Length: 342
Ligand code: 5GP
Image (cartoon, rainbow, N blue to C red; front, side):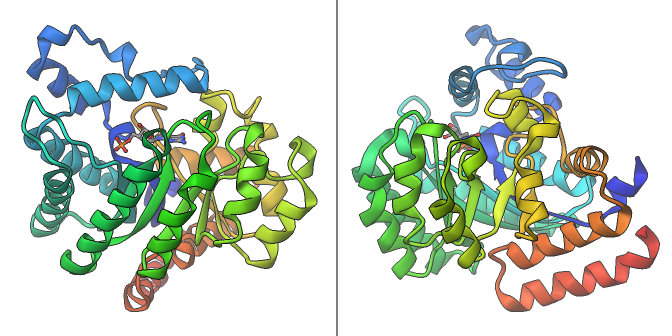
């Protein structure tokens, strides 16, 4: 539907290596035929579902395919261009710095290469503003988390404002959020914005209780925060009182089976309370979706009219980590486009 594609959108929750499209994957597979990787090992096509554990297996496969500077540059430029083609005007991309002995890649070069790709996209006049969040993979524990925060701090100062914050992600079965507190507190104190995956699985209740005191600037998923799914009033109170926006990824949660079906998605719970909700793709490559499709799905499942859809996409700008002048610029852009879209 052209309405959703023309709707200006802001994507705030996109993991780089989960966002690799079919076309880019084909190029990567052709570069490394000896790995014998097929596309079915890196994406969940329509009607299929996987366990969360299987999804994390997929990321490992993708990481084998994206392991050099050359790969990261190509993947980032492709992903940025694809979001722009989908009508995304502002993108906060996130990725976990990785070192790869085989290709001589360091974590610093990893981030530098992504920043270089963002700069090249700008030079190529791709119509999108891109910023970067450095991801902490919880699986790697508190020591690596602290190193990653220091790396993020350095880039926040040296990237001309391209690095804005920190993401806490990785397999939620590794429930060590409490151990991450010193790193997350340090990040906060140094001015990095915090986007934390919280309560993706039911066992994270206590962890969320602790991390919500930071508080984070945005919440990823928050699937099991509310009492109807085993969360608690105290968690909901903290989120509501502090008005912490929640990044909601419909297709991702249905395909990784943390939500039983689209109509049972917790979007409804938070949206009905007037809480700031941001629709996002999470991993557009792995989950075979795009942001237009996520808006269209939300509209049809939760009966949102065009004005309500517009308000959602406009609100996403407000929830972004963009500095105030960029937010104002984006809001003007939205205002200019409104008569053509609505
Ligand atoms: P990358 O950071 O390598 O660019 O993107 C893939 C990584 O993002 C995964 O290895 C994982 O750490 C994180 N990730 C992607 N999707 C999800 C998700 O749905 N939940 C969580 N917790 N982490 C995710």
